[in-house]
Each structure stands twice: as C-alpha cells, then as structure tokens.
Length: 267
Length: 267
Image 1 (cartoon, rainbow over the protein chains, first blue to last red):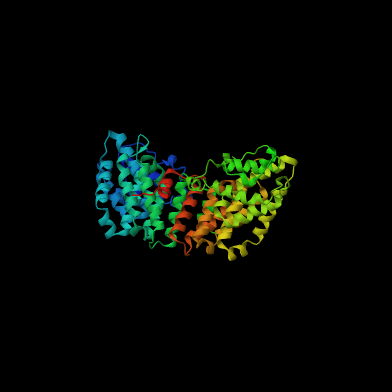
Image 2: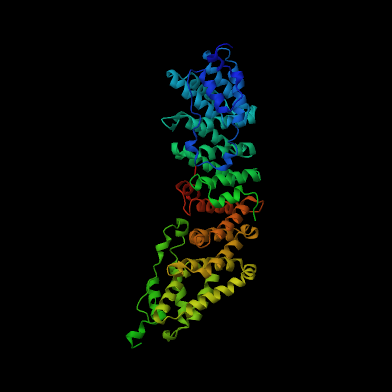
C-alpha cells in the first residue's frame, strides 16, 4: 500500500490495455519490459484469420484471473501453475486459445532472459504433451475441448520460436492433430473442418517448410475426404476446396479465389 | 506418270511419315516446304495431354482421303472444300480433332505465303462460326460431335497465331464453349467434363492471358458445379478438383498434385 514499487505488482489493479497488463504481469518476473508484438512472420495471413485478431481483450480478463492467485507475492509466482492455468483455459475457450500463444511466448522470453529459467516453458510443453497423448479421449469426451486444443497447439507452434525457427518438437504433434482432423469422421463435423482449415491458413506454410512430405500426405487425406462418398456438408466442402486452392497457389489466396470465397455477393 | 515433277503431287502415293505427307500435300499449293512443328508454346502442358500426342498417324490417313478429291490436278485444290472436310472429319473423330489444328496452321501458313491468299483460313473460320452458332443443336443431336467440336476449336485456338498471339476472334467463342461445358447438365456428363479439363490444360493459360475475367467466371461455375448438389460422378469430381488446383498453382501441376492425380499407386 505504502510502497509505490510494490503497488505496481498488484494484478487486481490492472484495468488498462492488454499489453500494459502483460507488461505488468511480467514485472512479477522482475523484467523491465517485454515485446509482445511478434507479427513479422504473419504477412501471408489472410483476412479470414484477421477476423479473429482483435480478441486480445479476452486475454486481458483472463490474465487478471490467472495471475491473481500469485498475489500478494508476485515475485513467487508459480509459473508451472500459470502454464497449467493457460492450458486449462485454452481448452475451454476457443477465442482465448487462438491468442494464448502470444502470451506464452512473452512469458517464456521473459523467464529465459531473467535467469535462463524455463519453468513456464517446460510446464507448458509437458501439459501440451499430456493432452496430446490423450487427444482421442479428449475428442471423445469434449469435441469442443479437442478443437480448442488443436487451436492452442497450433498457436503455440506459430508463436514459439527457437533461433527464429518453429520448434521442431512441435512439428509432428501438430501434424498428428491436423491428420486427425482430416479423418472422415472429423471431416463430417463442421467445427473440426473449420478448425483444420483455420490452422492450415495460419501455420500451413511454416509446417510445410518443416516437413513437406507430411503436408503432401495431409492433402491426400483432404482431397480424399472431398472425393470419397462421405457426409461432408456444403460448408465443409467449401472450406476444404478453398484450402486446397490456397495451398496450390503457394499458401496465398488468388484474387479470383478471394472473390469467390470471401465476397458476400456473387453473380 | 512419265512426268517426274507431277509424280510428286499424287496424293495416293503417300505412305511415308505424316510430315512428309503434309509437305507433299502442300506442294499442291506450290510451296517448297512447310513447318509443322509448332510446339514452342506447349512447354507447360501436362503429360495427361501428352498421352494424346502420338496420334498424327490418324491425320495421315485422313489427308490421303481429304486431298484425293483434288487430284488429278492438285494445283487446283479447292481449299474451302479442304477446310470443310477437315471440320467434318473433326466433328466425327475426337482423336483427329485434337491434332487438326496443326494441319490447319500449316495449310494457312502455306496459302498465305504463296500469294497472301486465305481461302482455307476463311473457309475454316466460317465453318467454325456456323457450328458455333448451332452448338446447342449440335450438342442435342450428337453429344460426341459437340465434344469433338469443342476439342477442335480449342485446338485451332491453340495453333492459329497472328503475330505469335492467339486469334482474338476465337477467344470468346472458345470461352463460350467452355462455359457451356461447365453448366450443370454438362458437368453430369463425364465426357464433357473430360473435354472441359483437357481443353483447360491445353489452352487455359493462354485464354486467361487474353481475358482473365472470363476465366475467373468460368472457375466460379466449376467451383459451383463442384459444391452444389449435383450428380457429378467421382471421376468428374476428381477431374474438376485437379483443374482447380492446376489453375491455382499458376497452370502447373505441383509435385504433390502430380503424385495424387497421376500416380497409379497411392498409399
């Protein structure tokens, strides 16, 4: 109360913008500031994805909840617990799961800079692996949770970097999740198709660079799903056709495809 | 008989290779030789098309028949009649219709060089236009003839050049034919779908350069045909998906697409 220096640590006092909140939360890690802007490799993203961008407000509300358990002594913040809370929340909230990677990246950077520690990072990756190993059960138990999980792990893959490269350890788990989404029983679920194409828009190009053969195999499944007699909805067909064109055009939307898939009015 | 110089004009005496035959036929136009090799702009063609290449033998047999009516005085060959015979034969023989453009190109060049005449060219284009105007009747009367006609006009578009550019006058008729093939009732006919994608492989890129907007519109129809509930066969779906990817990739078959669409064995 009387200490201005400590006043800053009170998570409950945050009500400014998200970046300010994140900055302050990271002061609990004794770091002066962080960079949360990591959009440099997103220049090939489509506006489809852009519609999901302005959701950081969610993260703010979340961080208030997440970090509050570490008060009143934020210096002793349990970063493994923070990692678990972030994963837990991601599995319940798809909007959050789309943006959590940015937050995780910021925390990992901060913790690493502080003292070469990686409690949060290890906690995060362990939890991701646990959920990955139990993904079939997760999908059976909670289709919504499964979609959130895939969204989250792809978002982590998108944001976490080692020497400005995606994490090799995540390549195959991410592929495995996308392969699962491309199975016939998933392709008959619009939410899973939507998730599949959204992730491919987001990380497809990077994934392909890491392992082209698996991407080729994934698109064999996608084409097969299209062509074999299945119960694909019209929307699912549209989404899959779009992603097939998107990849064929070098992970870009051509002007003609843009007009076809993204215009409200067509002749 | 006794005149060695005239001996050469006897069409019936041809039994050598097609190019030799064509050369000799064009001697009736008093030309020393012609170039029938015009493959320089075909470097982007796929091997799908290549399977239809070695059919020039057909043309040889045809030329024997066609040109024989102009004997015994080949100097007086009726080139308008030749044009009509070529079109007639193209409407009956799809293999021939795929190669006739080369022959027409050679005759047009020869006639033009001789005396700036274009009897054959005019006759050919007039006939093409007549058939074009009656294309719905042709399709109703003879689906096979209609497919042959589209194949032929596309082949003519492919070969005939003015200042090394495709003939502007053919752009819209060719597009109109392809648009007709992309209507739902045509898409439910495998032979018409096959013709559509074959022509797009062959002349799609050139057509797009001449009028991108119409190509965009054509692909709207193709995608719609794919996505709307219609009676597309599996083969038709496969063909259409392939051409959609082919165009999206810049009128190229990517290695992954090649493996998917052209390999016999798939895992």
